[in-house]
Figure (cartoon, rainbow, N blue to C red):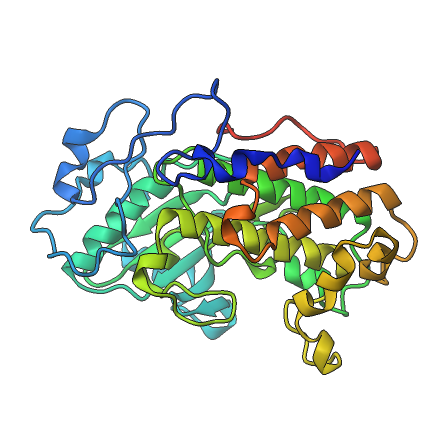
Length: 375
């Protein structure tokens, strides 16, 4: 079985339309998206819909609305800034677990015996930013999927914009994939299960919202692992309010490129990078390698079409403990996702389905049905 057959001509037809996410004709329509105007959230929302800003990334030129979203519509917990400051021990440096353009992430504990949470302090200020923030919080609060981090609550006191999310038992994927201090390298089957589950989470975000929810900064450091190495996608959505849209070379793209379709295609590309990193154990950029091998794509692409060279792509830590046919099919999936012409890349539904071929080639992987539906 050639895995490329999993990707049909649907890649270039209406399933690529960002206004109508991919899916079969029998699947229910994605939820209708409410207007970006916060005052219209309540009047336009119908049962089963998930309100979201129509185009947050490209809304900078619009005037700030005069009203705020109705916070009573947000089915999540509201925290005061004082509560979150106490949860992080005054935002101590030793509680800092991540930092980026969008802000800082702290480890917090809610109450004396409360659960561990991740608290994101976003770089958002002002009335207009608060309205955007609450609209996005409303969207995040409606997400229910086993492979996407759950929103616990938020804080919008004064000029503070903080998100409170669940905290996984383990840290991010990059720490287990690239950190040489980790004494137990991930085996082939664990890596493919992580890739499969991450693909399901991404498929859910693309297919169940209209316009699709996109990650845009998907990378191994953004995939968190629980105690059983099940992945959960994190840091999507609201991080895009403060951060510019970047291409894979780290350059800001023109505003017109920040369309829903572009963001979906960028997600697929970034998933392909992660899959290749899982296969090879290499970072996207590795300055320790010879100059012609420092960029993972420059190194890997010459081997994509020659199955005899696929074993050269495998992480040396895996050694020979992998099914050869499963490797070939996984490399095929990565190659399809990493195509330079964005419209040729598969949709995430096809990527998820392709893992049935990887399962057939390595039957130790047990896959559940596609998780396009919420869980």
